[in-house]
Image (cartoon, rainbow, N blue to C red; front, top):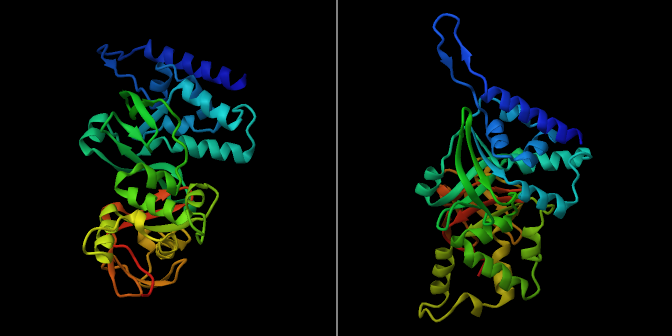
Length: 329
């Protein structure tokens, strides 16, 4: 009830502000009213978002200078989140408040005003939110625009470009959960072969249960050097120049051994990539942090794709590479 009252107080203040104009004593010049992203949320009846902002002390943050791009969940989206998680905004523990705050920040881009046109023109890609993961690294947000603006493969923009003085608000139909490594592997079609390889390795006796591990927000953190689809295609030709071998033809144990050379314990962002030996779950590889390359035990060199590094999730970070690393042959 306290949060609901606070929400109505905020709404009352907002209505008072937009209904009042300030005039100069000298020339009756109208002074433009400053409208924040919080005001815009309230004007669109996003009372559940307002209540969550109050419960986590984020209201004043989003009333600041910004600029902010806010993907604002609808009331129905928040109701679904609370139902699924059992969270009570009026009775949050310290840990729950921190979790809800991080989820809310995962809907905010600080420092830019990103319009729907900007996103559509980009087509697809990654940006960083204000939420944080391991080592306080900002979480990534993956967007696609082929069938409307979709975020992390599930949340769709339903009402775009609600402009405020300190940013812009895009209303979305689903709360954007804190992403895992699996979130980014499964939502980016350029990594579909990696997902297939993880599934194939899991069909045998894997070193780790790959899919469940990368999907577990509490696991890790891990650093994953993720081969692109082209990297896997090149490997298949390397193994069988006739082109008659598909990924599904490989032995699960072999795929498991290969995958272990792409996983490092810890959250290693590109700026912290060492120059020299890197211990993977499978064995040592060599990194060159100037050339941005990785070399496997067979002296095969893989380039780290500089436009696809530091894809940060809640349980680790992903860097895309252009060649599959192999165990000693």
